[in-house]
Length: 393
Picture 1 (cartoon, rainbow, N blue to C red):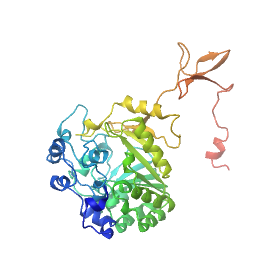
Picture 2 (cartoon, helix red, strand yellow):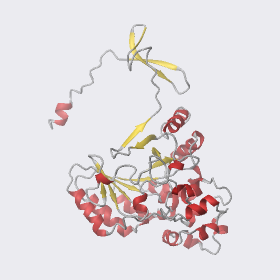
Picture 3 (cartoon, rainbow, N blue to C red):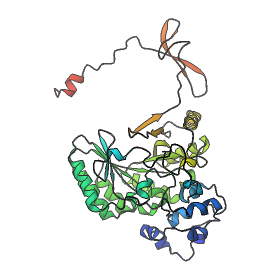
């Protein structure tokens, strides 16, 4: 159904105005009920009063009004299950709080940090990992909080990369983004910036020429976005990604594996290849974090591994992401992959011997085993290291 039919009386100019989209986000059951046939589970979810609800008219126009399993509805409209506690749920599911030296910074790695610049989003994803912040529990991130974070980053020479996140920085004006990115780019030890935003997916009109020029000025800067289903790969989203890439701003995607929403190999394959065709690289497929109220959306870890195994060999390696688990103890992400190691009978990795040759048995994507022989020499030291790292060249 075209957006003109679902939002009669709205002009083309208003529809393409990202600020209009934010001002007219659907937030109540009554507003959403005019667009979709809300189920009893959705009505219970909307009555919970936990994580905020807001859906841009653009993203709401993608909802199937009659099918409650629509992946856009499932991501944007809460279900009553959000109020049902489950084993393993956590307020701080990835252990960020002990790693916040100042309010706006999370640093879990030696060389990179997260700068939180807002607590609001164009659409509040129901699988949100930072619900304690996007739910309004902490309050807004004002200029003093962000400036304190930038000052702290300036005093950390070991940092090489900063991810600007929130909330979603895509809700900020160009002027506000410049006031954040400019001071970060002026820090000598920062090499790479990332802007984590779902705007290309839920608010593609935000990606206008002025924003692209702003982001390009602060290169190397990567936009990290968040497509979860092929239904989101609309002409408008495609245009937003093309505008970024054509303007010299690389785009990478971090999807979340969501049970009953994108949890089949066919859907994931269509998503990853669709993104690649739009020049968007799939960086991660995230295992769902242990955020309060999201257990109904989480998949068994083995399921994700099995889906990637099924896709290997069927989908270009350029399209396949890493399956990542953000550990709940705050020690960061680890990647999990299908094992193709067969080895030898009763022997460990690299210990198989075939016809007098030492090597490893590996399983190909089609299920046939193959023997990979070890080289005759095993010393992996690099003799040039002393010259290179000693500054002698």
